Length: 125
View: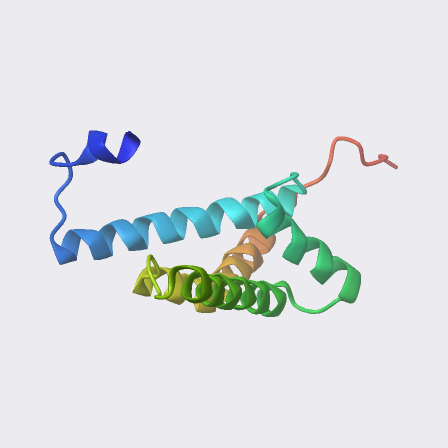
């Protein structure tokens, strides 16, 4: 089990856990922003908001937050109904659902100021 491999290796005090969350959160936001800009085929939970934003012309951050919060709510409800109690839903998951779309949008906007991604399939004029 991968989880057991790391037990005792990394410090798990609350300060370290917050630091791990911040680092992983930022890396995920940067990765998703890059994937969106490059037009890469990414996992459906990130692809759906990107495509829906393109189709509807609604800001990506708004769609991403709405989608993440909807998925979080459905998961929480299903967990409560099936298990009879809420389990496995931490503060980091809730924070990410409500903020990640906005941070990805901000990182993407910053990227747009400095670089332009172009597909190799784009016809050059």
